[in-house]
Length: 329
Image 1: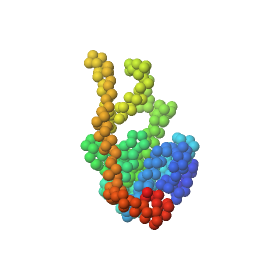
Image 2 (image 1 turned 180 degrees about the vertical axis):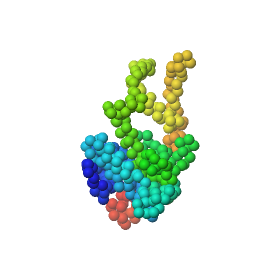
Image 3 (image 1 turned 120 degrees about the vertical axis):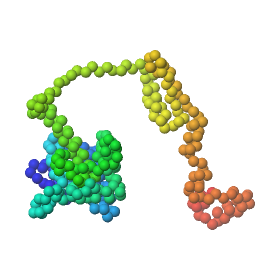
Image 4 (image 1 turned 135 degrees about the vertical axis):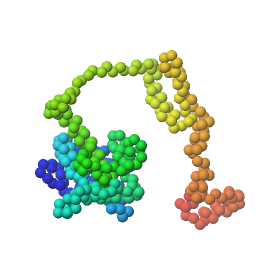
């Protein structure tokens, strides 16, 4: 992967984020285009695919390593170029006669469960461990399964369809494996950021003007909602925030608001602590001593009589060392 102008690139054999430490990932996130959260997602994807390989499932290995160029824009440009190259569907050999047959140009363009790059059976990966549902976006928190493998209208599972030119071009029959799909997701985000930066430049603004699009700054008056909380009660705001959280978890705490029917403002606020519900919750949360002993597998014996107790003490003192006597007395 060493190419002209590829600042900070390393040999392909060392392109493995799965074995990197957290300190290395954090330093790498501060150098190039990919953030630390995105690197963590790529590392999780590679580790998940490696675990699937242990189950005799053929899984690919995506040799993508982010750029370490000091200029963020150039680093992003290099990452976009590398990602598009890795996400291009695999073509047949130029000397293969099937390549020139209509619809046979790409090698793995046969079924929707095959990855168009390496031919990995994504159906087996989903059956073993759905990595699409485990790899999430660092900003929205949505998984790849929710964003790409569901119908946007019916929300039913639907395979993601790849394109010939990665983000554009004709649709294919195949899809992307979890690791390639995550790289595709990052590529879309990087290209969107690049387009935003380009539109802010003079050349970008000229292009928009030629297309008949102009940006006009319209002043919008923002009306700030007036806070009617008295100054005396503002110091209790953290207390009420904790109460609102606990009311969703513990039924023993209730926060009641009585609004004025004319103004719609809370005139009266009441806090209710129900001791009966508290005691019931504590009983459910704290198991009894007998239950704990039963879970540990310890058998309880009846207490010996006074004569047996004295005999046992004599036997313990004669037959056990001093440290073991202390454990049983």
